[in-house]
Image (cartoon, rainbow, N blue to C red):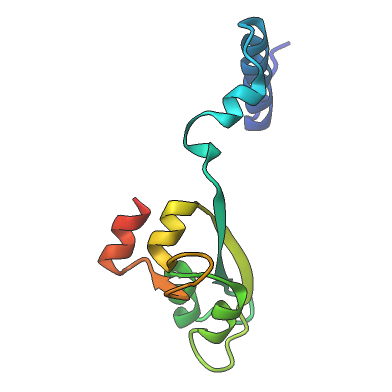
Length: 125
């Protein structure tokens, strides 16, 4: 009988293999987690997510391109009056990238940026 594998099975087996090889090599998994750029502090950014009933074109374009420093800024800068988009955590950025977009986290210079702006696109790459 031939067994088929789905994506979840392959990822699970790959993770187990990687963990086993790491332990066999004598490297603690925590050492890998602390090395590289991932050791830099991360900062959250926020976004607006259109709901099913109110996913008009303005909301979709706004949600796809705007990044906000905090949820209050997201709420105050909606695509249009009456916008029902949900405020969500958009993701996390390394602290130096977040600072390049919004300024120092203790004194934010900009509360929102747009991915379509050339300097923002360069900062995010």
